[in-house]
Image 1 (cartoon, helix red, strand yellow):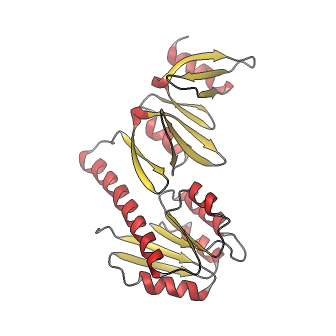
Image 2 (cartoon, rainbow, N blue to C red):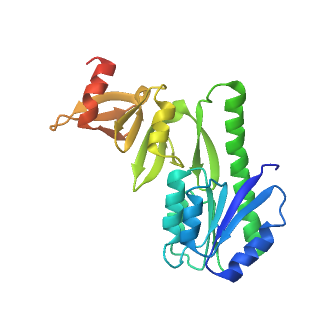
Image 3 (tube, rainbow, N blue to C red):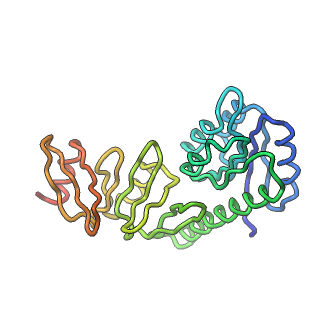
Length: 248
């Protein structure tokens, strides 16, 4: 792989940080931009400087690594994150945040190598999609979703709806649910010309997958989907816009 990556390491344990530096500095096409012992200094830097990948401790003084990761992803959602920690308590939440890997201390060089491979693979896929879009002057009718560690290319026509749960994005297709790594506003802007509709502050629905609307007592509607038992709520503020769209 020849994809160059900018990497930052944040760990308040100096020995662990130095060990990661020794491993990463030997890689070609990887730029180790900064290392931080202080997570607050790291956060200030990361919110102003986009990078490709972040190795991040969790239990640190001042701020938690999970919080730091959330703040970075809110601004730069394509950042690949690998948590490196002595605690396994946060593994589920880490992968819900689309973490590339979760490494327990003490660790061997092979674990960092494995995480770097995954990061470079995801970075290469993302850059390839961006490059194709730019070269051919059109947007590809696909988005990237995540299934565990796999990056999945999802055609627009397979998507039934997007959902936000506890600030995490889920992409629903007929048979599977994938995790998204963008904001709902990003998907709304990307898909607004493709018959996707922001039905609710937590939902975007593919109108081609809607089979019927059922009124509720509070002047809103439930949106029933074809070949699915799922129901998407339509908020009161969106009723007029949808009625104008379908002329009912």
